[in-house]
Structure formats: structure tokens, C-alpha cells
Image (cartoon, rainbow, N blue to C red; front, top):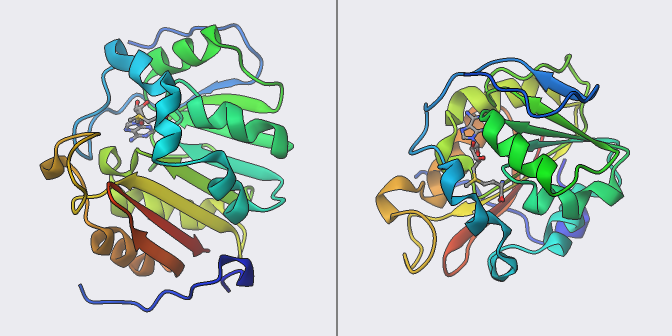
Length: 216
Ligand SMILES: C[S@@+](CC[C@H](N)C(=O)[O-])C[C@H]1O[C@@H](n2cnc3c(N)ncnc32)[C@H](O)[C@@H]1O
């Protein structure tokens, strides 16, 4: 069931392993690359740490959906720009990224104690059934194998878990972010969520990004 705090009810429409740290909490699982669109190039990672990105998604709007969950999974955590913002609010936060280089860059900026770096593909998560109770993904959905990732998330999340997906929209202005041709339209992602058994609560296109909340 969707949280009433969300406010708006969505109506469906048709439409080379190099381990950076000897950290106990660094889990390495798979190294599959590229099943969505273009995978983000670690050489451009500085762009991910640009504070102007809060123009497109804020910590507060993510927290407003994720509530007081115990184990948050961040799909495609990158350098940890948003992960670090969210970390103080969750006892456990699994930062999942397929590229060890991204975790290395995350580590250079500091990994909060509650965060575990998980090198895995989003469609092959190393968590037991129902072991997490919230999921977030920022600016990454277009890089992921969408249907497979959402099916995997279904298995990992407890019932009623909140999910928030924010990404560049194919119906955006194209003034920032990846090329429009590499983005999903809002409807593709909401349909994929419903196909995977999620209940979509809110789905909006903004000027450049979409914002979708759902529950398991
Ligand atoms: C554009 S970056 C966004 C990073 C972060 N979410 C942010 O907003 O700053 C996308 C990240 O997703 C990761 N990624 C791409 N495909 C993935 C997959 N199948 N599983 C897990 N992570 C993946 C990339 O390595 C990259 O670090």
C-alpha cells in the first residue's frame, strides 16, 4: 500500500576486479557490465560530486519517501553523492555498484560506518529474500537491466517496502544529463514496476527528470 504521506495516488497508464579497500563491509559479487544503456564512465566521476546536482534531486525528497527503514539498498551508488547524504538516516545502507572503480572513488571521499560497498549487478543482489526494507536509485535506472533489476528487488524487499526511482527522463529538456535517446520515458519505468508486482504510488515528470515512488 502506498504511504499517505506521498499525497498523490498514481493512476496506471498504458503506455578486472580491483578491490579498493580491505574493508570488512565490502562485498564483491559480480562484474557483469552493460545491460541497460551506456554505463557511466568513472573518468567522469567528478561530475557526480557537483553540488548543483541537488537542482535535479534533493536529499529531502528521497527521505520523504524512504521513511525510517532499517536496511536501504541504493542501486548504482556511484561515488556516493546521494548515499552519503542518506547514510545518517538508516542503520544499514547497501551501496550497490557494478564498477569497483566507483567504489574506490566513493572510498576516497569517506564511507560512513553504516554503509557497505557492494560490487554487484542490480539484477543479481547478494541479499536474502526480504532482507531489505527500502530501495533508492538516483540517475541510474537508464543504465540498469530494468525488468531483471525490478524482479530481483521484489525478492529482496519486505512487503510494503518503499521504493524511489529518480532518473533523467526521455521527455526531459535534454539540457543536462545523458542524451535523450539513452533515457527511459516515465511510462516505461512505471509499467516495468507494475509488471514486476510493485504498486506505483506517485509518478511525475519534471523538467528534466522523473520521480517515481512505489511499494513492494
Ligand atoms: C550515473 S551514475 C549515478 C550514481 C549515483 N546514483 C548518483 O546519483 O550520484 C550510475 C552508476 O550506476 C552504476 N551501474 C551501471 N550499471 C549497473 C548495474 N547493472 N548494477 C549496479 N550498478 C550499475 C554505474 O557504475 C554508475 O556508478
